[in-house]
Length: 102
Ligand SMILES: [Zn+2]
Image 1 (cartoon, rainbow, N blue to C red):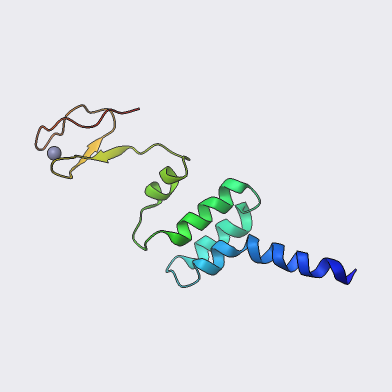
Image 2: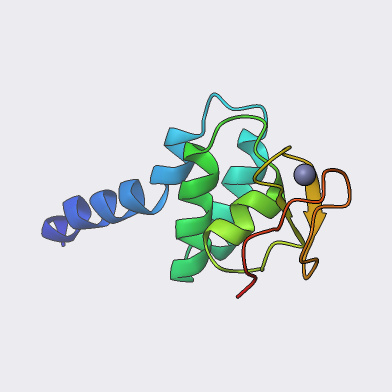
């Protein structure tokens, strides 16, 4: 049975790749939990990997929207960078037209 050990170790190493990448992050424990509990769903594994690769202060909403799990509730105004709620055609601060919502 020893011929099964190497592929098994490689599989475990690949499975926990997001945990290894995110090891030094402040939320390493949360990345490990997501990797361990939802890594078997491909989406959970990809989410943990993206989380491990994103910069430290990225919000959960940014991470979730990047994998298509949620649609963002707001978007930044192209002119003044103010957060514009989803569906608003114009920025409340500067009046600039916002990009079309899909
Ligand atoms: Zn604006």
